[in-house]
View 1 (tube, rainbow over the protein chains, first blue to last red):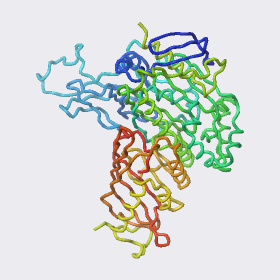
View 2 (cartoon, rainbow over the protein chains, first blue to last red):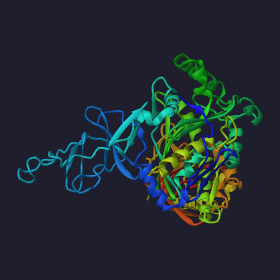
View 3 (cartoon, chains in turn purple, cyan):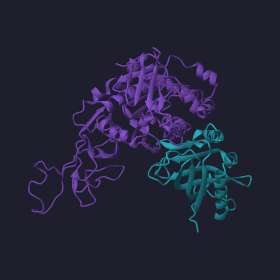
View 4 (cartoon, chains in turn brown, orange):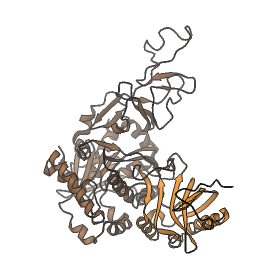
Length: 432
Length: 174
């Protein structure tokens, strides 16, 4: 159960300074620049937390596979001959070469191109040699020559996560209240959801935590994205005043536990799931009315209204962003050093959408999101500018994340959700 | 000698120009972009024009109704893209990056009622702050003639790269 975010105490850690009385929250800029911090993160955060691997819809059939890099590890995410979902380290047990080098495919097994070792798609060693080449019990007596499975693979509502720590708690326990976010986006459709083809893979020359903060930062929108909003008010039709007058309900932030958090509110853009704009015309109104009627019948009026008309930005700790805004983006991000992020950004959409509707959704996605959108490139510029600015950390050492800290109920343009992230980050980094 | 295919009916021979003339047009387009003369660049387009940049490594015939792109502009959004890039508040491109485009390997693919289809390869360098990024790929242009002037009816810039690393953005017009 999600709770409204409240300040939880004061602390004076190495990286976080929190003064609950005065409502001050500071984060050390060293946390963004230090090689030592990065190496600690690999061990204590990316080595211990559940990390998003992929969506079940990406592997619709038995024998389908995709290759992914998760926190520096090359992985195979696949379904075996029985249709079971699996995750393997993409490295040959023989001498280490990657056994799958395509981005995706359908294969009964994997064969290493280096010396030809072969494996079934359940990971089992399947190479034949003349008798006497290897011992008769080769690979069967604690010297496995199978592909190495990732220690843990679990899913919630078709979102598959891995954990490199065999002793980690279950995914469900880890997700805590953040299952609400996965439920809300999964309930958009009666047919289930799918990842649309075409992934935006890009990088940013900044620390990964800057992108985490930015992904659910309502405060920066009006300032950084002024040019987007100028476009938007022309694109949606009608006046800015009209569009803004339709916004209702206070915005909120949610603390889902374990560092997961979200903000929720309303913005003037169209939502393909349930908020039309004048530019979509009468047809748009009709389409949206039908979608809402189906939604209400399936999940009830109150929940349908939340799904259809509220915008939300969420971060599932440490690095899965789910932004259910003018379209739905699922974005995972990994550091490859203190100052470089690898981003993979996907569009999530209802299965069985009509082509016209899919086009409307993707157009909506592109107007704001991604490397060619009217907003994301300016975010990237801001993040890189901050990273460069941290070169002065010795003399200007602290970031301020205090906004709204003394409020009973912080809004979506406060920074309570970021404080949830940072408290969990500090807890994992400082734990004895 | 270019291979010539004629689809959707006959094309009057008089509407086809020489490759050198099409090349001149593409070089002029590149120069306008290099010099950030974006209003003049936009004026090269017809008002039903489209401008696409699919995700890196996509096939030429990929559809923006089915796949996620980086950019899939109709003329309305293209006009806004230019309006936006003309403002200082387009932070990704302010201060403006310095850009240099090489356009080469121009071929006439064919023509139909929409116009003449051209394929060219490009290498574009973008320099801003401490970094110089390179984009490479090929353009697919559909050009038509209106009142004797060549105009762009469609431009699709295909990035012949596996991903957008390290560039991270397509904040310039390719």
